[in-house]
Amino acid sequence: MWSNISAAPFLLTGFPGLEIFHPWISISFFVIYVSILLSNSTLLFLIREDRALHEPMYYFLALLAATDLGVTLTTMPTVLGVLWLDHRAISHGACYFQAYLIHSLSIVESGVLLVMAYDRFIAIRNPLRYTSILTNAKVVKIGLGVLMRGFILIVPIITTLSGFPYCKSHVLSHAFCLHQDVIKLACADITFNRLYPIVLVSLTGFLDSVLILISYILILNTVMGIASGKEQAKALNTCVSHISCVLVFYVTVTGLTLIHRFGKYVPHVVHIIMSYIYFLFPPFMNPITYSMKTKQIRNGINRLLSLHRI
Image (cartoon, rainbow, N blue to C red):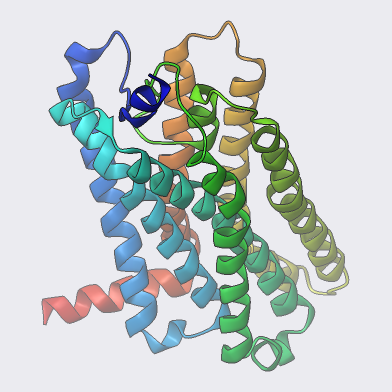
């Protein structure tokens, strides 16, 4: 009997109690998804084509944009499938793979924000040696390290999911698969899958945030040593975009964590909305932030638009 239940597909969930509004809600999601795809794709194209942006800072920004695209393309098919077509069933293999990509890319994004802080520290501490310290080869190695960390560390808890029997309800609480959501349905000893994520978050997200904070303390210390107030402002201005992205990412992470940890009496729909904010707000805001706050990006967009007018 258990084998038959285990073989049944998982069922994704949209907004419980609001099913009648799913078609209207899906329009908002579609607009947001298209905006994310267009803005991040434009940023990637701009960095690739504009030689003025061929610097370490913008290579790391391209990695951030690619990560945001990855998260969006991973969640978009099932979310719109549930909201538009009421297509809720998802096979176990597809669910595990989606969860693997979502969690891996979340770790990658945290790592990218950390290396971007390191990039700003080098640029302000050693401006004359910036490009000689962060050579193209070193940028590639750092990027590969960030990707490998994200995609390897998450493997243990995802592979164990495939070995568990699922004899409880197969209904998931979101329109995409998350490890913490799937594991609740397992009929097995899930101690490892409860403890490993805590260690993983401590060694990635928490450690990354601490190192980012230390980087900015060192940056501030360096800036305070600059005699000219104008030069101080100019140095700090190069960090504004990155600080904004860090705040957007970690504020949404903290909000989602607090809701899941202490929100027992919070309506379930609030949990769902917070999860969508976590997955959609940073990819939506990051390209806007860099376009508004970074002069070189704005100039690149203007050059791109002027070429299309010719």
